[in-house]
Image (cartoon, rainbow, N blue to C red; front, side, top):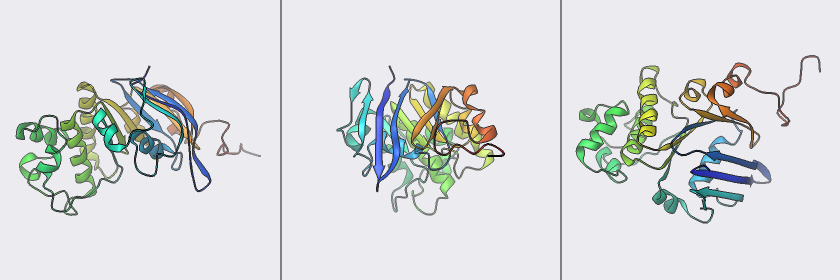
Length: 243
């Protein structure tokens, strides 16, 4: 049994089915990856698990430690220890980075905040007193958000495109931070279309057209990135040569 289980999730927007009878188990203490083309429903799946506004009118169920959380809102799920790092992190005009991180950190000490910043690839002396606003680049805000999750020590961390906006030199720090989350006991779910990010996971799911079309250990999933598609029964299956 996984710490998070999604059961027959179906979600439609404006008559279009985004998630189509999707089921998946995410095992506790593991790093999982959900990969697939743009529009496959990956970020939608993360939003439904988190309980974001606009993503709650679905069919099926979501279980956390074996209990349904379908009727729980965003903040109730957050209190259970579920968190989501968006592909495009939010800005908080006027809010100091120190205060932003302490708001959700399990250990609110200055030392813990500084350690989390360092592990996410940010110099604490340079960043801890800065504001989480437009003065920070997208990549910097991405690191700040990851640092806040390290300090938070959640039960489940959904990371949407964790390498988006990150320079190549910083990728190793980001990947190290993902491994640190696992060492802290966090179950990590990576939403990605990157082979490099998939390689940080132990187990992966391939999504297409709102469905899980394959799953298994990372080595089984990696060939997806060679052809960018696998033979399947979805409507997006590419035509064979000569057809």
